[in-house]
Length: 275
Image (cartoon, rainbow, N blue to C red; front, top):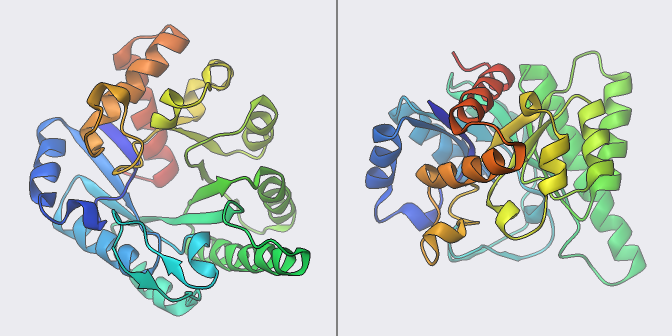
């Protein structure tokens, strides 16, 4: 079995043929962790996971939904959504499903940032506070976290380091769609986190990161419907295309496809407590 540790089959992009896409994952022995980005998509992820044996769910509020009026990506939902707040109890209720195996995707995203210094400070502080609330939920439920980080590695590493230093429970998780360098890799590994590798490796050079990262700390993911590997150019990404991520790692690490597929699945099972 291969585990796609980050998919969004709950998104609008799959409304027309979701059943067919899921059947292809089942036929090719691919299991998926379906990731929520706000309450609605988290709820949909749980519903899909409860309907299919090879799908698991993660629930959480993505940092992009914390600022002003956000236009949802067309693949996620073609409408404007109001700024969302993190309702601890509503997400806690969703997590009662046995198919919920993580809190995510949560984290920090400084890409679409305000231009004034005051608003920028408020923007960053709000993301940090909501992130800490979701870490609290993960600790209460003893679940790992799936972390989104864009243009915010320094702040995320500081926050995680401080939380781990004072936490009464271990914080474990994965840095989804890793885009850092060797310095960030070393710091995340020292904090005990796994590294999520996906199709971004066909867009930016992460060869040295992959070489240096121990295989036992790597998870493979598609982030579908995004980041389609070039071998399937002009197609919407889907979980079965995880094979191209594995093939790229195979070449960089000079290991067999089977070894990488088996070990990364084992890593995901260990992190997410998948039996």
